[in-house]
Image (tube, rainbow, N blue to C red):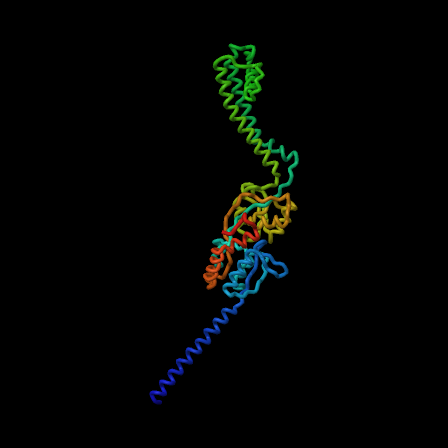
Length: 369
């Protein structure tokens, strides 16, 4: 073969090689662009809402916007709860989980999360049953109040005795020498002094007696103020309803409904509550209404939205919030899509789109951060 023929053959081979590679690259690019993901939709309103396979909600809207920017085609698959969706994701049965998925260290060992698109926290929903008359006054018949009264009587007896010792020689008509009558009169003088009634029938005349009475006036004001404040506080709490749970410290010996595999499970256990596992918020609400549980611990935005959709004046949500946590989209470990997805998600956040979506569903009180 001549030199010129070899040259032509070599050039032909090189051109053919690059054409084949270009075709393979185009085919691969086309396959990636036409790839259809299986997206597991799981969670509660207002983040995931399924109306006859018409999906909407905060999580769904955000996912659709990012998927559109990344030219991602997907097929939704419905799940009753987030934990089942994450399990299938870890096993490779689906490609992404869309919903209010709390980002936790335990879950991050099994799947890879996107940047958080919403900040949430746990809250407590409980009943506010109108208390009966006995419920309102029951707080006045506690062992602690009994102890306080016994201590008060003991102090009153000491003050009465000191007044009797100071006055019995100088004023025997007011404070008789007989100990029982003299101390009783001293206690009566202490009570009249404390209440500022001032009958004037008994009053100390000696310097020591007046010192004792003056000291008692100051001490009794502090003591009475503290006791009245404690009783008023107890009556106020009882007026809220005996079933109202305003803080986690009240969980002890109470049944608390939590969703399956929710971060709320460990939280309730930490405060000695009895766990009642439910599949969804509707089931938990039914148990609470039927007095099968005393409270529900769940994410505050969902609780507020649920109560707005199902108004009930006998239910309340605690002001106190616990375990602040972020929601993210979940992908398989080492997924190549997460980096590009996060960039698009951050763009939406910077443009204020995430805030607008959140405000549209939850109002201005709770905005994504």
